Length: 325
Image 1: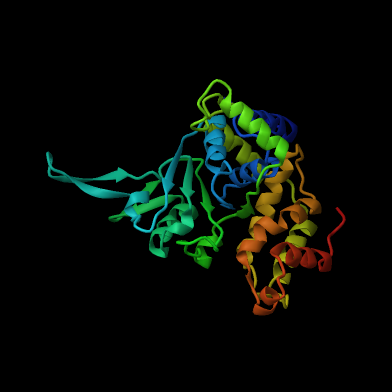
Image 2 (image 1 turned 90 degrees about the horizontal axis):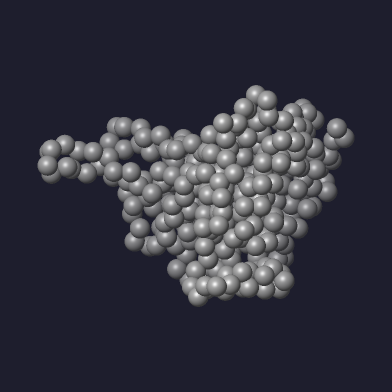
């Protein structure tokens, strides 16, 4: 068992390098996506990934769960999916005449909500309590979720048919949102060669991924990330950057205080991933887009002008002075 009190940031980073090496046995390339998934889990949050089907998002979570010695479950979201299909339900035992709670698939370490925007708002809302309180309340009882717990949700771009925009309240509960892109040709070639080596290629497998540590050990890393030194000037920078989203002419509705908190949580996790026990302003800068963009509602003028969220966040970064620490 890992001794949390004796673990240094450098030692933690070495463990995380091993985790990434195990993931790379099955999930090739997309280093930024892997890093953001680890940062989100280290920060105790949830990740929203937008992209077309077939980019390996589900495989990544399966590999990550195996590498940290945890469990993962996947639910395909559809228009007829019910809240109880996610959280579980109270049912009657016909033999004893008593009611009991049957856990739903959300009772796992890494819950994969595949194509979450194909389900209506009522079903999406079933995840609200799980994502915020890390528990399920049903029939007057609270049922705690496993620790660690993370939701990795995927969604199709809105121009695809049969999708529903996520409610703002739910988007705000995702620590980060990133876009999965097509891999470079060399990575795609390496993936095809590996998948077809000695198999039919019918499906991608995470069987070769080995556990680097137990879930309890990953919690030790997460606790270490929460103690990463953060200079008050860096905190002030994150708050000023978030506040700037509320006064920008390109933004109709800016990010709330949860955005400032998310920036610091992710920046601490990024520092640990890189073997540092202190946060740099550059950590906040590099995470501004995946942390803040999905919390913003852009103005009609910016949409008409075709301004991307990357451009808007870049402008905000340029106008918000960073401290020297």
